[in-house]
Image (cartoon, rainbow, N blue to C red; front, side, top):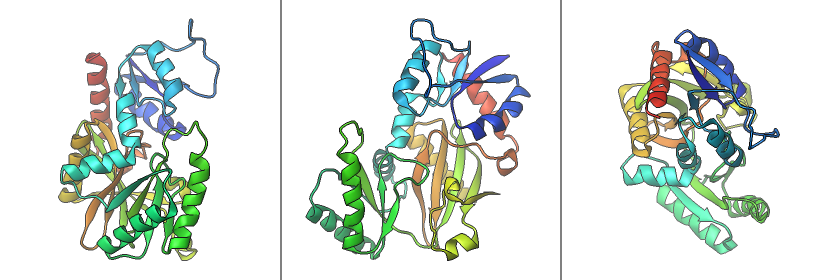
Length: 293
C-alpha cells in the first residue's frame, strides 16, 4: 500500500483518510510545526509521497528534506498561490478575468495610498474597495472601505504589523468590491475540474452586516454543479499557474465571472459536494507524483 504524508488541516485529514485507504493509499499524519524535531535522526514515518507541502515553510523545508519524497503541490506551488498579487498578475497577463486590483508595497505615504485608491475607484466606477494583506488566508485582515479615512485607518494597522522586521511580506492589495457576488470554490485535480462548493453566509449574518464568505468566518459551503464556462475558467487558472491540485475562488455577478484567489492547500469538503470520481482522480494524482520521484 502506498503511504502518503499529509500535513494539511485536521478536517481534510479526517475526510480523505478512508476514501484513499479504499484506493490503496494509507494516509499518514506528519506534524511539521509546533514540535521539537531532531535533524540528525528525525522521528518521521516512512512514506512514498506527500500531499501539500506544510504551510510553515521553514519547518516544512526541514521535514520535507528529512522525508525525501515528492509532494502533490510542493514548496513552489504553495509560494505561488500564497502570493495573491503574483497570481492575479499572472492570470491577467494570460487574459484570465480577475477583479481590478492594485498592489501596494509598504512603506508608502498616505498620499500614495489615497491616489491609488482614487484611481482604482475611478477606473471601476465604484465607491467601495476591499483591502487585504497579500499573503494571508481565511479572510484574515481583509476589510471593506468606502472613504479615505477608513482606508488610511486600515493601512495604519498594516504599517504597525509590517514594521516588525521578521514580517516577510509587507504588501497589500486594493481591490474593487463586487457587491452581491456569488462565491464559489472550484477544485481542480490534475488540471481538470473535480467539483465545487458555493460559500454563503446565513441570512442572519448578512443582516448583521457580515460580508466575508470564508467558511472559517461562519459561511456555509454547499455543493454545486458549475456551468461549463466557470469550470473552464478554473481549469485555465490552474493551467496558467502550473499547479496540479488547486482550489480556485470564483466570484460571479450578473455580468462578470472572475478568479478572485487561489489556494494550493485547499480544504477538502464532504465527498458528496464533488464529482463522483473525485477520489479516484486524487488517488491517481498521488500515485503519479510518487512514481515520478
